[in-house]
Image (cartoon, rainbow, N blue to C red; front, side):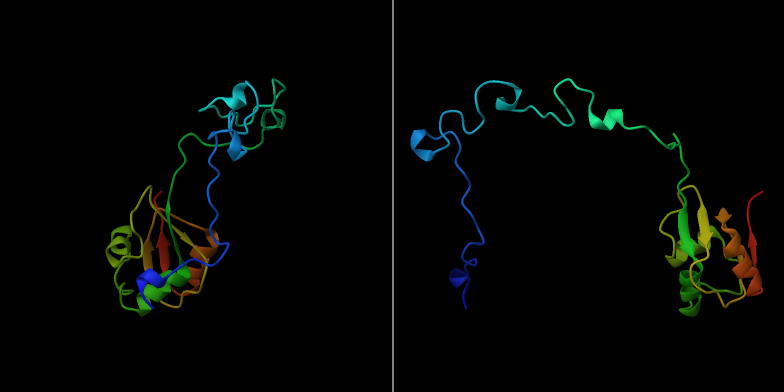
Length: 152
């Protein structure tokens, strides 16, 4: 087979409709847009507009709360931390800080700190210093004989 012999499956491609190209095309004169009005003009989008009626997205009740400056933490799980220890990318005998996690490649960037979550199993005894940790993650580390240090 050669490049010039390649072709698409029959019916896979469809020719574009050439709008506004005379009466014989079937979409001539006004190009299927009707007569006058906002929708016949170019460059106009009417998102959630409902003809002056209050739009649905404004009629529905507002719920919840969005913080103006939320903290973004880099998240690590116990299972991945254990995997990096098994692969000797992190030394479990030394103290593990956020900088060690970045050097090992487990965390790409600190953001507002590193948060430890309890997904997976930890078997190594480690001393970990991170910005935040879930209660179950702290319990799992202490159960393995290690400790988690959080800022006061």
